[in-house]
Amino acid sequence: MEQIVQQIEAWKSEIDQLQISNATALEEYRIRFLGTKGIVKGLFGEMKNVPAEKKKEFGAVLNVFKQFAEEKFEAWKQQVSEGGEGESGLDLSLPADALPLGSRHPITLVRNRIVSIFQRLGFSVAEGPEIEDDWHNFSALNLPENHPARDMQDTFYVKNPETGGADWLLRTHTSSVQVREMEKGKLPIRIICPGRVFRNETISARAHCFFHQVEGLYIAENVSFADLKQTLYFFVQEMFGKDVKVRFRPSYFPFTEPSAEMDISCLICGGKGCNVCKHTGWVEILGCGMVHPKVLENCGIDPNKYTGFAFGMGVERITMLKYQIKDLRLFSENDVRFLKQFEGA
Ligand code: PHE
Image 1: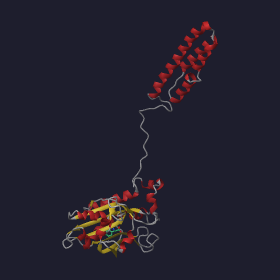
Image 2 (image 1 turned 120 degrees about the vertical axis):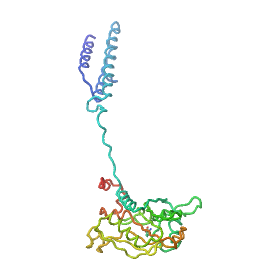
Image 3 (image 1 turned 90 degrees about the vertical axis):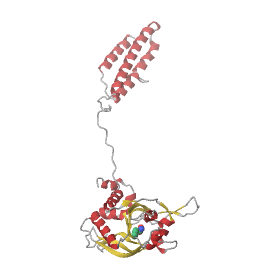
């Protein structure tokens, strides 16, 4: 027993010299002295070998040692949790770890850019539902049922719980928002309609089943094709720079007459001819035209008093040209290696 008491004294002075300032060292100490297989437990196990008349005295020595070891533990524990300086000690005065910040998606960047250019010309933003009815997406726009031009805008149909029929659809363009604005009957109208649209297309580098548009509409008295050209010319210069040339090609849309498609001189080769412009020197960026009188009538606007122009462009197309992106699918795959390239853009 004498020997054990001496050993206890040695441990006491060892503990007195310990300096514990981090959680790892503290845990090591706890396991060594206070753990289930630790020194203190072991000492109490020795009790059975101590002669009966000495048990009381030995018990007292053990209890003093146990209390000493526990008090030390509690004191260090307090210190460590208040922020010891050790490797895993918590120092609340240090600055926090930086949170990894994301960045805007290139489609958002370019859409915002397009919107702000038109806002400077007095256009305001109008939005509408992505699930539409036939009237707002097609019929009001002079695209009656069985019209062959519907073929180019095949879409996805949704069951309407009110009728039980599949007579709702995912909008194929944001022209549906223009119809909704015209139906409100407040003139003049000068709006742009950014938003997501859907088409039943096979997914490839050039086509997707969903993409984004910005469409525009200006209706007032005496709006002419010259206004349309000048507005779009301003847009192109602001978006792509002063050196870009534009050209209008006659085209067909059921909701505009006359209709045109607008090309810009190829940004990649400067008009000399390359793969992107298929060696023509020009790339198409949008469709436009004067709003068809039938459409105005459908929306309750007097075509003898009012005229207007409309245009529509794909945000993906503009973004691909601006950043020379060759595959449309990159926009929706959420690959950070792609997205990271637009940080700070
Ligand atoms: N709505 C047409 C489309 O999505 C684009 C367009 C808008 C063309 C307005 C002319 C006028 O293809």
